[in-house]
Image (cartoon, rainbow, N blue to C red):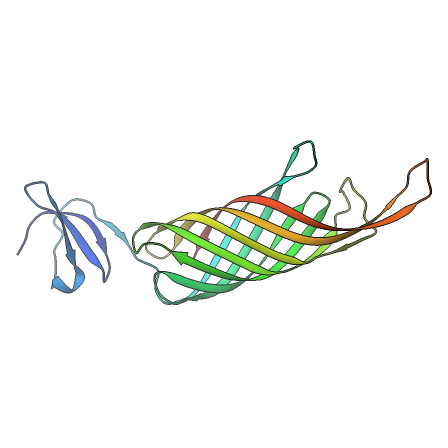
Length: 212
């Protein structure tokens, strides 16, 4: 039998106990038959388990608007439903809504995620790849004759904080959206000219979300 202050407990993983000498001891779960709590506080959380999950996030897109280094700030909302293989790897199918100035995009994509450590707080890596449908926004300052989507991909790093049944995830990522934009140039010194441009929206994103 051992007496001390419970510092941290991860179900089915380990228990950290502070003994009388002030030292912290980490005890694997399979070494513990039972324990009793008399007083004090205990930090309890669960590592992500194998099974289905939903991850919903929202945040901001930072896009360079023109050659004068003007940066547009737009909104981004996404949700991913998938399957977690263990406490480190998960994959899912996601979709969302991104705004790029005078256009909006609806991406559908495959999402792959990797947690680096089996701990309450861990760095995470994510990668997404898919296709987006795009359209013009009526209140945009640019007018397009036609807007078509294209390849969508994203690579990001973040921080995951595990709780008992959920996780809070902060993410910083690079996102690129391919598109085809057609517009008519109406200049007073020459005739109208229709131009089609293969445009790549390059963005940095900052998001926060919850996994259930």
